[in-house]
Length: 186
Image (cartoon, rainbow, N blue to C red; front, side, top):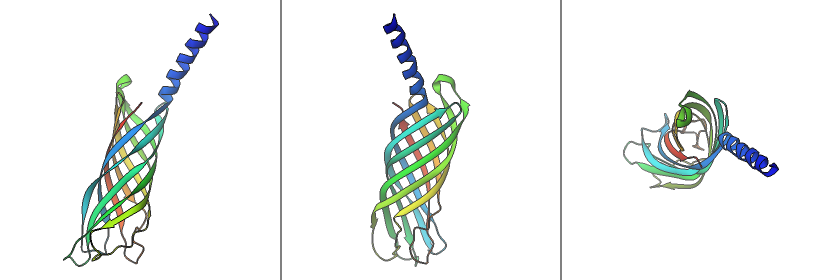
């Protein structure tokens, strides 16, 4: 009888813990553009990211941490004649706090969230040196977005507004990123 009671208690504890903590991989598609007054033209580029997430659920609130690898692509032109394509890639870490605004029962929920994102650009590629930006390797952003959880899938739309001027010279360049991500909860 003691073994049956212990196994039942363990099963209930594991089920409660699995509802409290969720882990899984995440894939994202990023559209990066820059905010600047110093370049004549700029255009956005599409890139990818991948990593993992851990989410702690507390009733209608949750906290989420992510760590992964991401790319950012954009194009600038200082003179309006020659374009320079930039591809920045490296690690990123994200901290999110959110609220489940519409619970869908066992099916999932709809979430609203905000947070902080840090990127470290370990690889900086440019197509030429005509419009040279001396990129600062660390970029900080604030983010906001909405997400949907359906069964074991999680889909998020995020907008990241760069707060770091990534140009080390006197010119001002900040990134803005629209991000769609798909995750799977184990």
